[in-house]
Image (tube, rainbow, N blue to C red):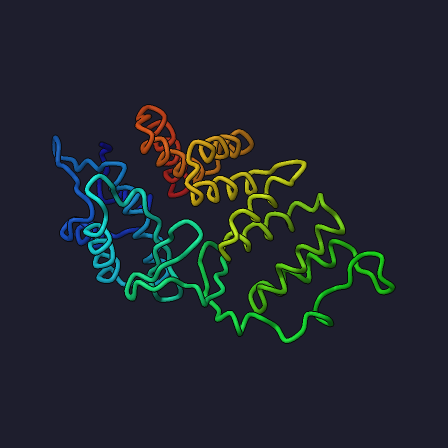
Length: 284
């Protein structure tokens, strides 16, 4: 259990005291008062961080609490919300289950949707809208063609296509890597798009194909491995991330969560405290 006051939680997660109290009243978190301060379990902190991300996507506290309550009641007795990933799909809440997303309100899987991650949020496009009539003129020709383009030029084209035509962007990133297999930014972005589309095996192959790693690539691989249910390997990838960038706050938080699941409380607390120190410095 970890002691925090309202200002601590607002600094760490951007949640006002009223939102924290609402989560407690709904039974989604269970703080315990000791010596005048509220203590929160690691499970509580995961719920608070999830609620913070959903609020940032303009989803109301009422809907967040309702979804958490319904999800908690549907989980087996030995399970907890620490084992479930929630994310925002526009103004809806979705439950990530490995390679798939299920809408919380309808229970339907997002099979007819193209799921694209951008700046930490997921966006949904109907597959028929995402599929362009023709890829010919919009996709830069591969190297060696008469009017060939460099890898950087293809990368710039792919980056510009991500929001409007993610399928074309993915193909352009693939073309970029054919031109230059060492293009790290293209590899990171392609892996991210494949992960969001649900092609986890191909995303892993792309990430692991890098000759030289980089903190964001290692972090994305770790998140992917979590979704594949390979948590011990995910811990190793998070450790590699932190070896390259000890200030990678999200890696500290995520690995703390995995250590907590693995019953390694000492390692979990060490990384959670590191995360808290970084958030404190950001709020200073």
